Image (cartoon, rainbow, N blue to C red; front, side):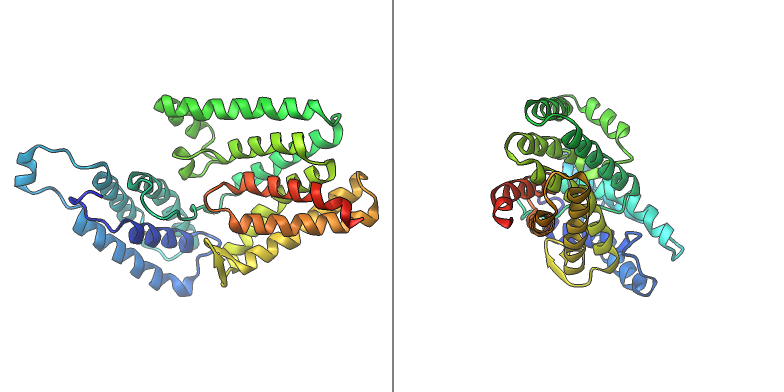
Length: 321
């Protein structure tokens, strides 16, 4: 790591990440605001000391500032500019919106030498609606299109488009900027630097279409589309008992319950399996999905959840009846 900035990258990354999580509209609490401000002041003081203006000797040397130092300075500027004077939930939500992109740019500049950390996914109701709508489209295709090659062809076409955009935006930065503006309302800032969640979802749909039984496909799509956003909301609002990678016991239980109920309802009304089997498949889908979401750190849960539910459901569902 560059000696000119001497940033303890992992410490700073985690400090800002926790600040953004606690300032999220669903997590923010008035009684904890002074503690939140104190942590912001600690980060600001740390960044000020390590992203100072270069000395005269450094300027004479002519060497440009490192990307890490520059990103640290831009993160500092964003935090100082966005720090709210008023203690309201909406002001802190605006703080998250302004600081989060600079945080992700800083994390990207840190490189891959640090231990992986869960991404920051602030409350985004537009994204949650898009998440649910995507699941509804996939579910409609599974229910109303002939099983077999038609689903594989459609999901493959979707995945080809998504991966083409992934490759293109890494070759042409201007395309990346355009796509982020186009999908800005439903994209997280970290997706500027990483594979988009929709791309992972498209890839998962190919595997579901190719290898999963129809009830397991339905369970995988429904559990992801319904339980994932509900678990995120419950975890941010009520999550007090952390389990792993930022996930909470409350969020995981919400995932299991909502995923089980949603999968059971859709499987029941669709008639793709006999009623005696609905409860078993739904419980299995909710449980496997919750475990997959809990274990997703390096891989995107839009891939791991439907694939895990589809695979385990295809293998074990026949044993439940």
